[in-house]
Length: 222
Image (cartoon, rainbow, N blue to C red; front, side):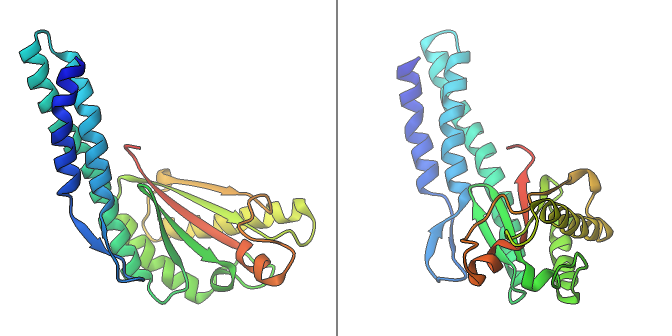
């Protein structure tokens, strides 16, 4: 089986090398699309599955090659789906103050509290509502994703109060998305309070970064 697997790897490599490229809208740098990595991994996995399923040496070789091609298509498909969604979110949310971050096949929308809520409030600002209108329009176009809405606070005040505030803020964002037509069953809403800081709580700049709502989009196949 090992021989047939290695015969299929050049196909996986060829698919990975020939994958499409995109241009980072912030840096202007050309980079290989996420779908390329998915295709390469899918090809390797498909090669193994195909080789294992064959009986004779010729059959294993053929099945390894077929499996590599099928795996590449599946792996690249997930990446391409998320590539398109990411591009539309970046376009629609440009200038809103909401960051779009790609993490593997996941997309994270970081909504800082300065954009989303007033002080000690869980009522969405008008600018946050407009941004969420744009985000929900894209989410409706790409229903094959799960969505986690997570609220976060800084460490000022009582921990239990911060926990409840983060939950209320996450719920406010999640509810607005469903009002915008995003299916409720796609959503997971959670409050983390002060427990997942991304910066130091020792200064105001760090605390401001910690006060946020993160929306994470994950492909259903993942």
